[in-house]
Length: 257
Image 1 (cartoon, rainbow, N blue to C red):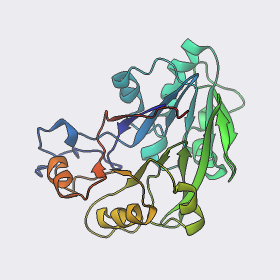
Image 2: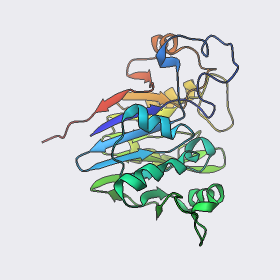
Image 3: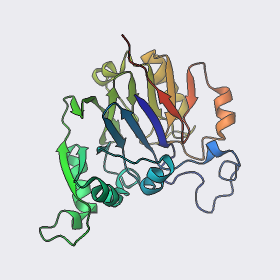
């Protein structure tokens, strides 16, 4: 299995429009962050988690030629706004796109993309097949995903455990029972928005504390704002086993005998 980070930025991305701060003006490519998403490939399956405003460019940049499903963490615009661009996959793959989400996110999709779900559809609108995520594991072409319920202030957001890998974004609380689903992962991804306290996101220090509690070998931080600091500067200060993710970072997981 491989996991590629398609985007590691917060809702406005990095750089932010019209911002002159050192991070937004940085020449380091690791300080250029599209909105959060990952691409997972395993034998016989290719899925993306979240399709935000940068979805089209992310698919082109990563050269995602085949896409079997999109899995959504929640219904905020920075995670769903690019869904219309599945039309290209509808055309070339000659079938609807499988969409996996909880019922709350389905409501957001129906609201934001009402034209997709109308009885009389305009020709060429996206073709979608909705699947509902509950609290039970589910499989996509043989790949098992275990939902992990986390809180984003008062909103329930889904993280996912996929074999040795766990992906959690947009969280500021994880219940002990859900933490147990993460334990034993080889790599955990957590959001780490900035240094200052935030109503709905972990700060970097809070995310570090979650990582230590989980006692995982490796933790990567995502959903990063320009307020956190330059990639190279923050990475140099992080404890062993913890690093900032960056756009294009690819992880490889080997099957164990």
